[in-house]
Length: 140
Image (cartoon, rainbow, N blue to C red):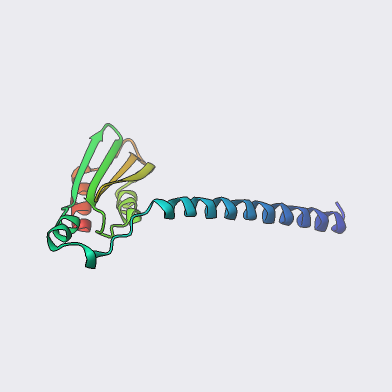
């Protein structure tokens, strides 16, 4: 291929990438609009004192289930705990797990996080008790 052909190919590739970026931006913007529309904005100053306690008093609950090389982690915590899912995933990866699926659901004033993972090395596995201990340190 000549230099001109290479440059033409590069220009075509860049233009396709630019179009794809625009499509993804539009998709992201439409998703964020729909997400923003479903978020609840709670102004704590307008909530009676007894209700404030109910919103912030959901203690975190962690459950770790291990079966063969698979590990499932479930965390239930309050909506306003400010918990970060990526920190939980980081702990699992540090302990030798490969995260296959991670999601969360918000129900009322609780957030349910679920992570499905698998041991990187089936021979070594993942120590569920150590994962549970580290996750409890994270949420406390």
